[in-house]
Length: 529
Image 1 (cartoon, rainbow, N blue to C red):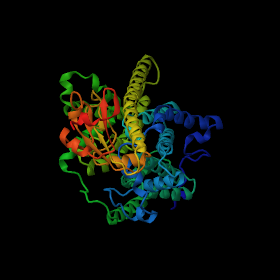
Image 2 (image 1 turned 90 degrees about the horizontal axis):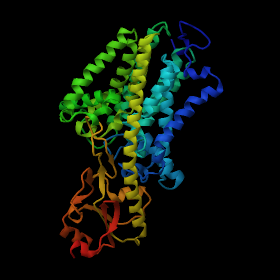
Image 3 (image 1 turned 90 degrees about the vertical axis):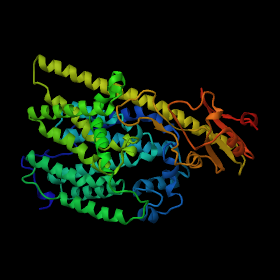
Image 4 (image 1 turned 180 degrees about the vertical axis):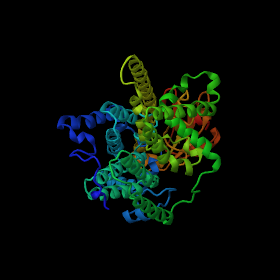
């Protein structure tokens, strides 16, 4: 039986609508998405003027010398095959004629705003009151792990695949509640695009199975149907194609020893509103982050699951934990801890379920009386503290982004001032900056300016510099007091004598000075020559 024929058991002219806001008046219909977009741009808007950082020097330019067919059939120069974002960047570059930071950063911001609204719509569709659904959208929008996924132009994979997966689920829900077979086609189309955006979309079949279970449990359909097999077949076909596409080799599965730290990192993500209190932990606890996450996190998750079950809301625990576990499965199974610890962006998609799980706590409140007022006050304090701490966390990272952007913008200006063919040596560019105090027990939460594996010439190219022969080296000898804490060097390390030899014949030598942070031209005398 096609989904169009699977009429809801409890039929009404509004049954199964998605999103539920479609039932409201026009003004209220637009109020939520506009408010969420305003929140996203108020918080993440500074990114529109930032430089291209992280891997942008490689990824954004990957399509410059490759055609559409090449991007679709090969992942040359990369470990992963994600052609859709590369095609988007190639098209945007062709349209603009340059790498414009505003437009390249605008894409993930718009998608993040859309995803926040989709989280709200999912919450309402699953039965959350409008206030709780709006809270879920706010928690999602301000999740601290998103400090990488949203302001970094090259992390477009994460918000884009989330939009497509949520759209596929929403369309499937409508198809199964009697709105026509065309919604199933739309769902499968979104699923296909998601697979070509990021390989982690292979988990969609399991999410569809979960949606089918919810529809049957809530008597929205007469019986479960095996439509999830369609998505499984689609994922299997993509997996075969993915294996055939040329790419750099890497192990398909992570070392089993990585599973324990990877699992604890997911546990930390589940409990981020509490984990952000880490910087105020006693020194004895700060010395044992792994033990603390396990000893505190496991009982807290068990307690929350038990509270949902006791209140007859166990399916909300299934939704939150199921979504997080399913969407995090590829991350847990395929990535080594050394990579995952630097990639909080990888929990962008799992944070949908995490936000819904925290927002649904309001369903556990007593119906009336003093106990309800006390519990409501406690929840308000928890949510307020979580959102406040997250905004402060993001604001600190925004200072890092602004600092790295200023250095790269100035380096571009210096390169532009050099005559064609002139060689420039840049010294002591920071590859990354870390916070002085760990914000979370596990992983790193700094900002990468130019990774060690990205050439400075590549980073300058996407940021608008003309082609110049440039070299980046690290020479602590020319820094008063040596290399500063909380920064990592870019380029190979050299001594003063080797720097002097490298600088011979260079048009100019510029070095970063850290107090205050700026580029400064080095005179030959400073190099001992």
